[in-house]
Image 1: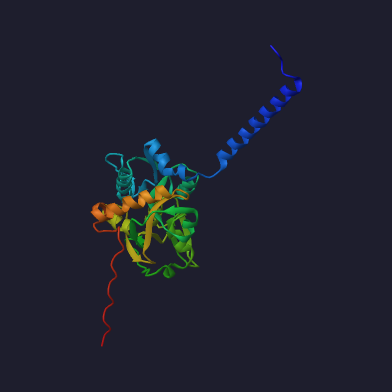
Image 2: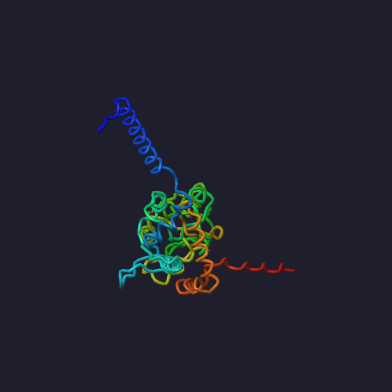
Length: 286
């Protein structure tokens, strides 16, 4: 058998080394390059068969553990289950503290958050949101025997106000100078401190307040509504247009067939999936 000249073998060896190095570079680039349209998270979820959904799990009536069954229950849970079903997926719930929930989404620990995430300009810079599925307003909570009257956040200057860490309520409270804002990882701790007098008031969602007054044994009551109506949506990482379109389509279909209203009415006694109609101004006195 005729052997190849030495310089030909050396050339072949060099070419192979170059190809191996090029392959390693392409593999490394593939690991760090952003996903393309073909890698939309919707495709990944359908290949997996599940939609990984984060929620707090300690925020009744939105998402919490049923004390009788230990299973997750609430408005967010039922909305998430219905959306996942319309996408042809099984919901896989992940519970996490509110303070870390957005960071977990950014890190890819789950696909979406369905946990009353307020749609704000700042959050929209980092994440995509579905169309709103809840409308509500901030409301104060005070002790049942509270003698002071807090009609606005300005009335709480020099007082201690409990809020959820990383929440829109925390941002709202911090915009008012003079309030000592105390942030909590979850609502139960905040309300316990309110009941024991460690804070003078708490600020949270008006829908949660109404539910709490019916079901909590704590000596607390509803205070004034403060601030504008907030919109809540399903949060997801940017760069997944197919997933966003599919979730928006599912919520739109649920609104059209009345199923979203039915879930809201079950948990709140009213339709919180649409903004409340404006109340006409009273005629001026003559």
